[in-house]
Image 1: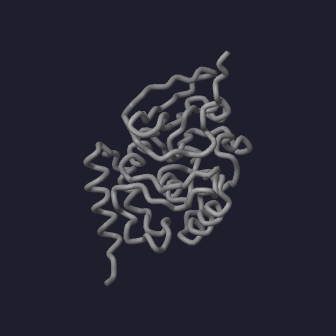
Image 2: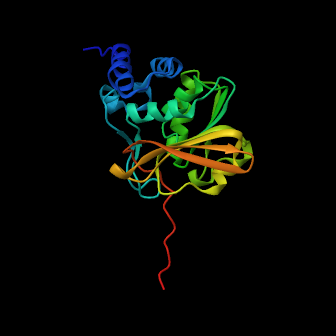
Length: 225
């Protein structure tokens, strides 16, 4: 039986994004334009549009932590929160197989997709190239260091939950730039947007979000005397 992924994509947008307050027309169009099934393991293609995270890399390959394609709804809300403009230069941290970078590339001028897992980085490069997303460059490196060589960025989006956001990432924002991230784990996770104005970075909490963790952003242990 042939699976109609186009219809599943439409149902994802109508049933998972619109119903959770993702209503920006450009964001919805970006999700409709990207074939999510191309960015999941072949054995899981029929699950590409379910409203759950999809594992794309097993534990042990990257800091002992499995990696996931984020559930569509929270990812859509994070993208909408970033308010990506057509002229923006975006850093996508933790791009995994490249799906998040593909969606962002439909909204921005260009995207740097940072990935720490070599196999995922290679897979993202190949898939994005094959599908014609030619305004995305995949870079391999530690996620918590960002990509200072290409900075500054108008938008930085972290594709998973973190304990804390390193100052080095804020330093890579352009004046007027936005950083969007989920801090905290599980039901304690909160989506936040940070705005840089001059040398000042201010943040606000926007919505609760339970998303999978990104490796490398663990809070430093505190010494107790």
